[in-house]
Image 1 (tube, rainbow, N blue to C red):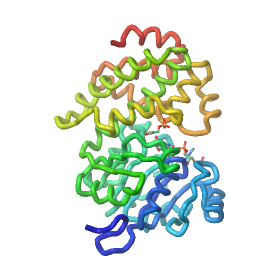
Image 2 (image 1 turned 120 degrees about the horizontal axis):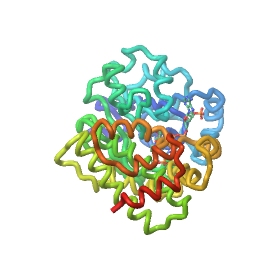
Image 3 (image 1 turned 45 degrees about the vertical axis):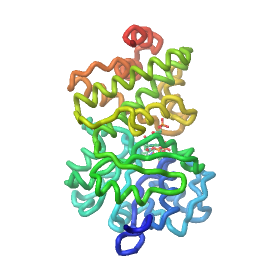
Image 4 (image 1 turned 180 degrees about the vertical axis):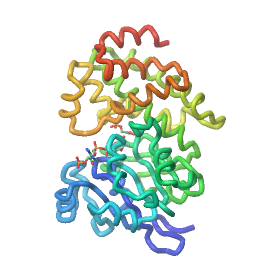
Length: 340
Ligand SMILES: NC(=O)C1=CN([C@@H]2O[C@H](COP(=O)(O)OP(=O)(O)OC[C@H]3O[C@@H](n4cnc5c(N)ncnc54)[C@H](OP(=O)(O)O)[C@@H]3O)[C@@H](O)[C@H]2O)C=CC1
Ligand SMILES: O=C(CO)COP(=O)(O)O
């Protein structure tokens, strides 16, 4: 077996990371501790210059020192992709189609595409890997996802985390070897779509948890909200992507839902909290300065739940608050009676 980060020939594996935000920064940091070469694409040329000079990302996780000997920050998307075997996608879902518009349909030929995005493609209501498979004709077994409870802030501080690589088990296992390290454990799971949908759902649930807190509901209510959310997620996955061996209590599903619902670092929870306290969506987004995927995801998710005819009262309450402009206080009064 090849050592961490080496191909079977012994040469370092070349990996592209697309995105310059906090999760991209944490992924670059953890990969660069293994023997890989990282081509890091981001849109800001000023940030690229800063990283080259100071070995830190100026605007996201700036306290994390990066091993620049292994990292080439670049603004040329095509060059970054052409020079890499693995392409890790970490641009928030709302912007990924804009970024990919510049690419030819054959751009991902012979590449392994790894989505680290916990969101859906807005215009099409599909998962990121479903979109890439269709638009770029990438074979299904060359699509992976990074899942599990993994706040970028904690990963950057080298606090123990457990990731799950979803997708084909052979390819997933090879990729997991590139990610593992002294503070990262990494397992595989074949449930590519189920894991991604659960990550989309948990972001919306975290928005709901934040709203509940902002409306002064307490720990007792949140515990019931989260227990119901797990059942909602299970109902949806069993209907949309049935899989006998799926264990909803595994960390890629329940673990991720719990961390986002309770963590001080969760942007989705923070965003929901502001809306619960009376902020408008716009002002909450501006004040946070980072992306809460749950805001975008709930729109597509709401449509998809209708398509599969799955009853999801938490998703509906968040959708009505954010997109139908119904007051969160009213929505939570209705939701209170729907929870068990
Ligand atoms: N943060 C975390 O702990 C985790 C995040 N994820 C997922 O990773 C993905 C990326 O999130 P994260 O890194 O946290 O994001 P951040 O909120 O930290 O950063 C936002 C990123 O989006 C970019 N961006 C903003 N507007 C645009 C635009 N119009 N076009 C292109 N890019 C734009 C920003 O670029 P710029 O700075 O130039 O504006 C920046 O790189 C999300 O799907 C998230 O769910 C998954 C697990 C953990
Ligand atoms: O997915 C995450 C942790 O696993 C990040 O969640 P937030 O986007 O809510 O911060």
